[in-house]
Image (cartoon, rainbow, N blue to C red; front, side, top):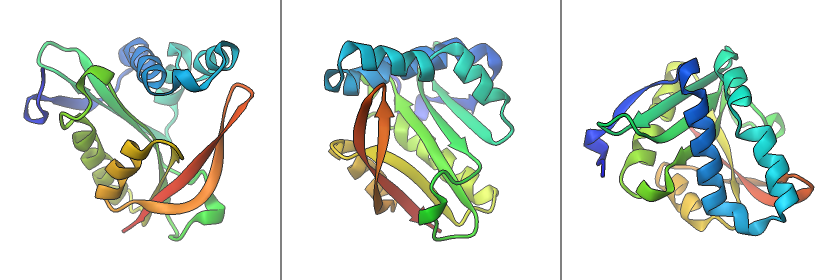
Amino acid sequence: MARACDLILRDAAPDDAAAIAGLGARAFCAAFAHLYVPEDLAAFLAASHVPAKVLAELADPRMRTHLAFDGEGRLLGFCKLVLGCAWPEYARAPSVIELKQLYTDPDVTGRGIGAALMDWALAQAASHGAGEVQLSVWSGNDGAQRFYGRYGFGKVADIHFMVGNQRDEEFLFAKVF
């Protein structure tokens, strides 16, 4: 399996939409499907992890999506950034970027793919003059919270995230540059 040094990193293109949607759904389900009734999970996946949604994001000039592949061309992870602030009430800098999603294939988590994508995200934020990066993380996802903490992110506020009709308690994490 790929190590971080074996990764091929590049920006996403419209031809990648189906693979991004598929990996997003697979990774989300591997981590969180057990939390939801089937109807809520299905509604969320149909709205959030489908090729049409990814294509719209790729066409949005305020979004950036970066991909990580292995040497055989298999998508191992992706990271989405929004060049804007989703939680302005908690902003601590004049220019804020949102890290929207950082997903890796569940079979290769812990092999440096998330780190390579996070390095890209922070470099992008710096190149766009951001003074802060914000992201939301499920309150029960201790592993993700530790990962973000290693990059200097810390909890800023309690927020929520809807999956179908279920309200999840989330934490807003942020890093100020």
